Image (tube, rainbow, N blue to C red):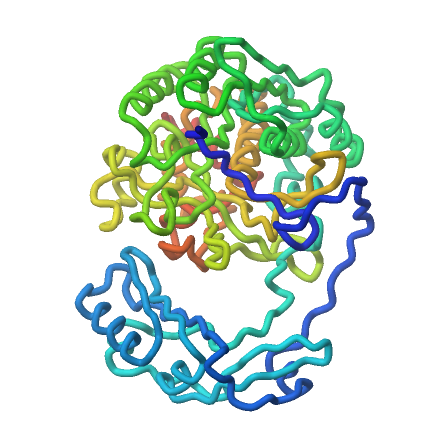
Amino acid sequence: MKTRAVLLAIAFGLSACQAPAREARTMNPLPVPKPAPTLSQAIARATDLGPANATVTVSLNFGLREPAPDALLVEKAVATLDASGMTAAWRPPSSLIAADGPAPAAAALLQVRIEAFRQADGSTFYAALDQPQLPTAIKAVATDVSGLDSYRRAHRYAVQPGGLTASDVLSFYNLKSLRDAGLDGTGQTIVLPEIDDFNVSDLNGFASKFGLPPFGPILTVRRDPSWGTPLKPEGETVLDLEIAHEVAPGAKLVVYMAADDFGHSARAFDAMVTEHLGSIISESLGSCEPDTPSGVRNTYAAIEDRAVAQGMSHFVASGDAGAFTCGQDQDPAASFPSTLPTVTAVGGTTVFESQQGVYFKEYAWGSPIDESGGGGGASVFYSLPDYQRKEAQSMGRGLRQVPDVAANGDPLTGFRIFFGGRDGQIGGTSASTPLWAGTVALINQDLKQKGLREVGFANPALYWMGENSDKLDPKPFHDVTAGNNLGYRAAPGWDFATGWGSMDGAALDAAWIRYIKSGGG
């Protein structure tokens, strides 16, 4: 039985469910899709089929006014929706009431006309033709309603088909200036605990395709019979290695392969810290925190304490199920070990390109359709650490809050990798985590060249930077203030959806130098 879930999401082609082709797939050049018609343009060009009937299900989302609303008022709103013929649900701390029901019921509830339309290609959609009017009970707790049309717009694919290339990643997060300054991670080693095997041919294909140094001289794979047998290749290990390598191609990579159960993986983790072959850990593994046995947590925490004492930086994926790591049918929960106060938890974002193909903006990653998103929330076991005191949220209940930082994780705006002998697009916080690890490899290299200590446990510095952002120019973080992770909204400053946000690589490097020189840590 698998007890440590791999935090992974892959999208080959345009569908995550599409069966992979056997042959290698060429994706160069990548076509840039033409903008789709606006909703009003689509309506004007489509055939009006009349009022949408009861066979058409409308899915509405009512955005709540407050992050912690009056539960009694929300219950009244839910009762109003249920009485109207819709089926409504809200579970704190969700920021929305979800309501599904037949189109005529939705139309009557919101006093709108909901028409059905057929496009020239035969596809259909529905759309409301009036401004919705919220009933009094709903207006008391909600500010708006979405889901009044089912027209699909091309902007749901926020980057070019095929995902971010190696050069895109450097450009998006302002890492290119560090690389141009001669920083490539030389002298650094990133260690990675993994539970699925990999084919070296995939790594070589990736390096060749993007003009990167070969993996051979920098890759070490550690195995031991007492660590059990890893799973067959699933793409997780390939993802971690390829993203770390494209950011810091001069850094060495050491993989610790273990079975996917707690006992075996704990042995490999203990060996990884004991051998201390590198000062940066990138971990894309996790499990539902409430369901992780106390013995497992205590063992892991003790090993992690040793890692911190040795000056190791440990980045851990926060999960790919948004605020519901244990499942949508369970209470909101975070992922262990990202909840440990001694690691840096990495969340996920959705990236949007500008018309010039460079960084434009990011939203918190949250996809209600497939119930995915960047992990975030409060621990149920660990107290709020001192470095997080100023960011204490009432919903955190005095407990450790995650994530600490974030980066691109949405599979629809993911990374271009090489797996199974072909190009693919991949996402998840499994992708944002090695991106942060590779970035710190560049920063460590710069710090050592300047005679300064390495990053070590990153959180004290990261929170100092976030709390002193107004004094830092340029800003070390892209503050993500829009979107949600299915339970928590992104907001200015630190939040449960994206932490402090994603990195501006060059600015982060400058801020770290300032932090250490000023006596930080």
